[in-house]
Length: 460
Image (tube, rainbow, N blue to C red; front, top):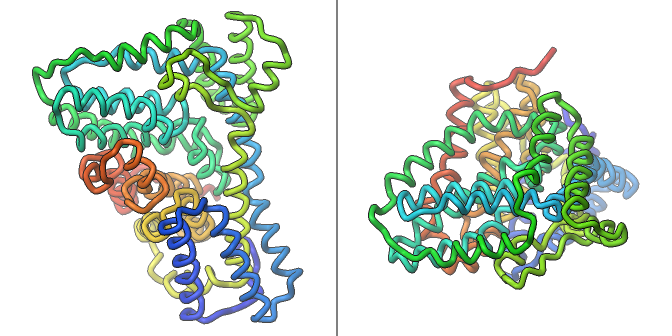
């Protein structure tokens, strides 16, 4: 029934108690003591090993389960390394700075909230990081909104919505790669399939922000000009720096493997950097590993463009491997099987399975407050359930993002919620009602699940 064979058969109440203990340990460690997720997961792994030994499961079996769980993430790990390289190469080659600059050209007083949403979406796709988008251009737009004396709550909602749209749909995003890798779906096939729910959510959100935007607002927009001038000072703003995106689209159209595509467009980015300013090979290798360091003197622009490199992915890779190790133990000890075995009678249709996966993703975000775990654990727990009702894995990866990635910023005690509230200086509960894109994600994915529309059946 499951990929990892259970070496124990706990009763439902016993398994439920272990799950509640894990949730409590994670929630208290992250929410109360502000621990990075890695340490609580190591604590949980230790608890599960002790529980397994008490159940007389040989340590060798526990170790095999841990290895099997971690090995499931190796495909994603290789992708993450190339993502780090890609980000560095696209910044040094000018692709990312040019995308962001063109986005800022659209700013005007009219339809302010809609434009904020649009630009944060462009920047989010460009850098592949929702939190970086919030902490840079998001902070700039909050300053503009304050100068215009318009709603900071709606502005923050538009910023968060745009940032997480970009994060969700960017091939540079760690969560996007994690979701596709967890269930074994090609990265670009996953992004394409997310369009069925993501594009309607984007359009609806854009219209709502346009309607809510004040008319006749006037301000100097000095902050935007400051950003634009800072980007121009990099010397990387040229139309031809968008060539890697063209190559990316062409290779995606011809269904080239994600790993090969990322390697090729990274090389194109490095080539563009050489065209603009010949670099010593030592410096190129250093930037590809350590990341690009922007030195324009504009601290906001430098914060936006100082990123990338293989080294920047190690935090995420460590978390993924630890979380999958924990998942391997949960399956080896039969805990997940026991929980799902009690409720699997409810999962008899596509709609019920999708709803169950969505609730699980939302529940993990709410109870633990950790975005990566909501993706990993939901994917591992529902792989077989989706197969049983004849749904292809890419349906599950879509649900994991619709009800996992975009939900985390809505939880006040979550990693994203705490960060965003701190950076934008506004409570999570204030911007939550206006994060239209994030709110629409779970609703649309469940609605499409019950309607049967946009679902891909498992090939026989």
